[in-house]
Image (tube, rainbow, N blue to C red; front, side, top):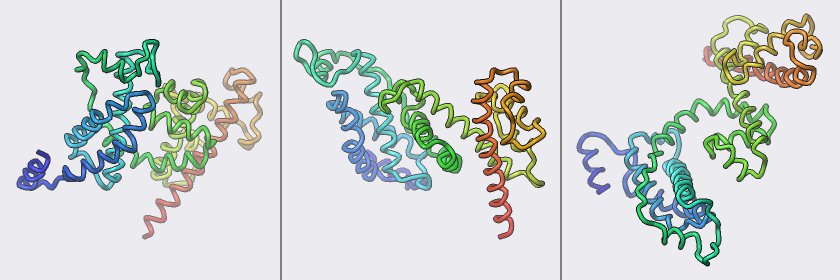
Length: 297
């Protein structure tokens, strides 16, 4: 069937991005390396073939969205397999309660319980192939932002924040369970990454468009504006630049007077905002230098 579809696309003048044979090779590898390990951990290995079939169907239906310039076919299929496996685990957990790895009071394994209670399992699982393709496209412009964030953030906070977004779809509970840390810590690291990413993204854009020298107001403008998550940094930034001396010498009392915040809040926010302003300035200057160098070639 897939070979016939390949031939139909060629006749129509559209070369398929990959053949059905190559897809099945990739799916088989994903089955061994991704699907089985994930399902086996919760006693659902019996669903491996079904999930592999869903992965193949999803990838084939969305093959026109696959761009080999953004990554290898195997990586794309593996990502779909991760989503499909997670979907299957979630669906079975929802239908059967918490899935335990071994046996229940009747001596039945989870797989045997599921087989006994199988009945009508016609729940629709949303297609994820297009989502994966879109994420690969997004990651193309995210790459320099994440590269910079990895260099300037606390390494642990960066890794936890990135994993929470990319591997757990911002599911704080799932991330906390797998990473072995509290939900509060996961949430803190997630927000920290989001804040740094915002500032770095704004600084990159600023560095590409500035024609004159960098001013303090340009750097502060890289902080989130009012109404956006992390907007407290903008208020803090404006308080910081109102100090007549060096930014590193701004006293907590000056910030308290300008913002009305308590001493502890002002001290904590001041430290974070100084770090963000420093990152923004560095990114702006580096991007301006890169833009200038490209213009001279």
